[in-house]
Length: 465
Image 1 (cartoon, one colour):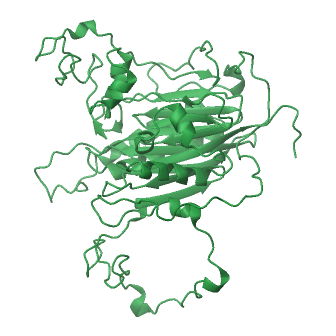
Image 2 (image 1 turned 45 degrees about the horizontal axis):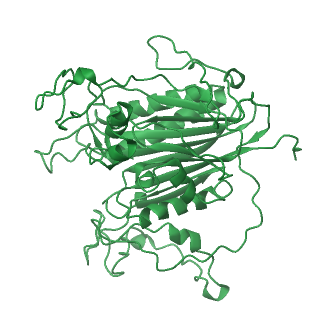
Image 3 (image 1 turned 135 degrees about the vertical axis):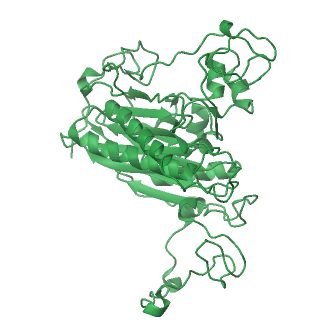
């Protein structure tokens, strides 16, 4: 992922000759293209609540005090929405803990020869998440022996054994003293569940480290109803310490949401404030001296740590998303006969070209400049412009929160719906593993991170347990 400054005319490059543009240019210095004739894309306010279904008239966005980044507090009943038939939403009991799964049927065998690929900076690829799908407890006769007693104090500090040659010891720099192989790091592959939400992150097959990060958690609202939270961040590779930026942003946004939701803060306002908190956390990294490795390469150009962010909160009948950058959220209904929807709009060069009417979406995203982002979290960002939106689905489904390492291989909502397992709402961790495996099968050119958040609507008339 790369980043470009956000000029006032809304274009990063000339539509005529692709020459880079400066803020305030009225004409292209290379070909003379009249930039004033290109309609500028206005930065819209936070998106209001709408129903996912047939198009409806969007109500006014939540108000915001002048000079404040915080959206005014609203109560769920104040947020308008309609069902897919255009009628007012009925009051329905909504569960966010997912449906009770049916007895598990034997899972189809997964081919053991699935390609893991090489071609990365290391010969040792990150653990393949598809192995988690097929792995099961070993037969009783093959159970591992009981763990050995704790090592003696003299051996307690001994270096770990190399996973490649199984002979050499791993030095403190993470490389084997015998064969020189780099050892897998903790962030190469991560999986986590928190209540109804689950996430998986993988280094992929081409990058030397995982610059993505995520946070998943569960919260309780003042009335006792549950809320599910998922945050996904993608480090900007052209910036300094992108892995630290994404980790700091994910942790800060998650902590902000877990503190705000139990206090009764409206989820859309809480999401907005969480993005602001994430931005502050990333900005603070630029103030830490001596952490960017400048002593090893004093001539290397260094940008401030930066990352994108996308998050979702699912609670009592409400689905909220927030984002900055080109990480995305999708809505995939359980009934695949119902339309899937992309819930976010990229802050990217490609999105600008489409918004300006200069390219079709297919043309823009096929261009090599497509992933140059125009919005990010970081001390050198042009401005902080958090986007939030609220939705009231009238049917059950799952929210897919992901980085471009996944959506590059399932870009359209229909494409995403085809690769999301039909039981993803009931088995979100398994569903996230399958999606990461899909990206690895497609080439794994980038880090891959996906979180799945179920949204379950209880049918009217259904009795409570």
